[in-house]
Length: 362
Image (cartoon, rainbow, N blue to C red; front, side, top):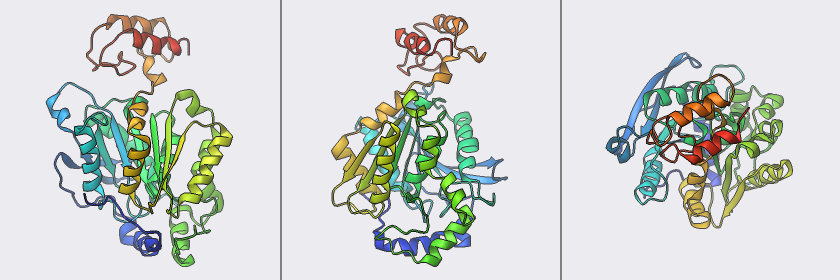
């Protein structure tokens, strides 16, 4: 299989130099990638005030079951080319679906440019986080048959995308049931302190620091997953968010990920932390190692997370008797295609009543 993205730590210097070039940093659309089931799409983003591209993979089940709704995995790529790893990533997850290791799901590959860090830039020129959470996700839900709920979304990414998954997922508690950080970086609290093994020249690092965070340490920390999770440490335990961290044992990003793991322990945030022996900064090998060491349970667990908002079936701002009445109206019906199927089991039954009662009078 073609590697998703292989970046020995010693090569990060050249990659960052490429990523922060003006041409790489400022393109909202990418060339099209062709692969079975993969579509190239564009949409208008109000946040960017521009047309933005993305790729989306539709599994065979999407066509075979024209009334069914499907969960969505948002894959956030690492720094460098926004499209280089799409085909191989699609192959990895498509193969897992066909073997029954993970449920059929849509795969969305947003365009994170070369080095946006999946973050709103301080100067406002690249509002990447807003493009994804405020514009792309609603567009996907309006265009495709998705499960528009926390239990229907996972955000996962590698390197820059791993840190981005933490930033987006931990900040937007309403959007994602699962967050997967793979070889995440940058995770150090001082961006200009280069992790050992990367050998990134100070000038190169400083240029990226300026482009994204305006060389402002307070801005950098405000957008850091460390700060974001500290602001609401109880939210994800209460909501049942499934959070995992995976990193190669010889990946230069490991110390920062290990520190973040300890930070989450201190905050009481439920998560898993897995290191993969003999793996450097390599997305495919990290995914393969996680599959071997921990299995595929992360995806099913993340998609089983209830969405408290979903129980407000009559949309009056409270979960009360009116919502119970709506659910009972659909009891034994819907075949998983209506909002009353709160637990995503495919039918409206006692499990959905249990989900509703859990948040009753909220």
